[in-house]
Image (tube, rainbow over all chains, first blue to last red; front, side, top):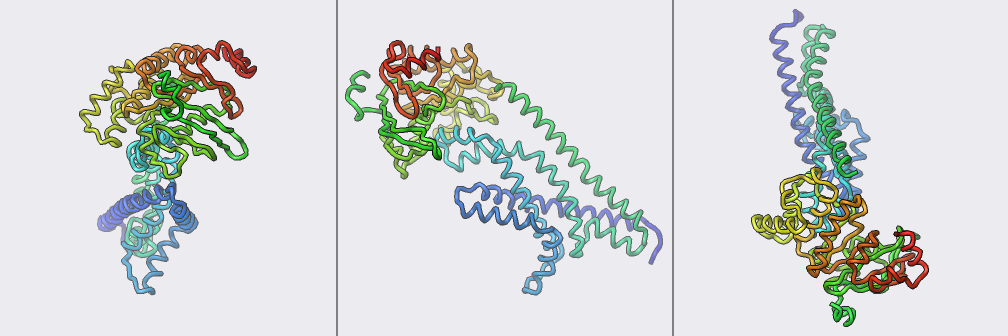
Length: 224
Length: 251
């Protein structure tokens, strides 16, 4: 063993980085779909549904993602359910992301002015029509910057999948370091790759935020 | 029209009977009774907090009432089993803050309800949108977004959006309160034209001059009650000191 960092190591890291992106996308899509359901459930006219959704959000937000990962990967096999590292990481991230995106999106839906609901009601639109045609299109505009911003959290949090043995970027760095024992060099490379993934996204989020701010300023001048 | 009014509640399009409504400990409506006959224009005036806007909102069931009866176009509004969407197809409401949908063009704003509620084909709904927009003098704003319009134009577009559902009654909730005098004038002209076409209307307004010229009947609300009502002449010759004082400060 030993030796110095070579192309094979770099290609292994690149492979890990690809899985970081892949896992992030899985978390975004899975968590996004589930989070949409959570957001709608949080504002459901049915009290029981609201309470259930609120309980889910509280529970997940009060639990470290690391523990959710342990639970799915190590906790389920004794119950007779074996899960692969990828499945455990995907499920855990989906559970986690759903709670946060659900809460972010609920806030966005509720920040559409109440008068918009009333105007839609006054036109005899059903609740589903009001939601789909009046409220959600406006909520999506509000939700875009914070959702893109949350993507950064998702990417960074995928590193926790290393604890269940899933080889993404952080775990790939660990494995190479075990062979080369060059922790500073290797983890700097890993950090730079994470930064390269996250920075453009957080920039994009800020640009979107600024655009929205300008749009809102223009609107308030109009209605003043 | 006069005969309709004389023949009583039977022919009334809107009828409130002893309506009571509280927000918590605050009694907002304290036994409100009035009728609106077909083709009649009723204006509701009164101080802020007198219950006038709440009374109007109860007609379209934006507020539920604690006691009493409200009947609108044959719908029993006080009945918990009311078919809300049927009621709202018969009643158009226009708000102080216009409430156009900002993500839709004026045409899309107008077409939305007729096409998704009444299932009118898109092409026909668009044709009707042009017609109602012409009615409020905005046919050139079809493809504009609300934020590109002035306040007065937005309010006229909101009126057109309600008209596109062909309501039997129109409710106006202080629709000119957010507008400067010039823009108020263009909105009032549209409402006046509607009155001349025979639309049944209930208006909450602060425009006394307009109330005097357009109203068939005026209801003055005070402390949650109909304190004085009659033809527009009560605005020039009030019989209660409260109305006299209100008009004195209102002009």
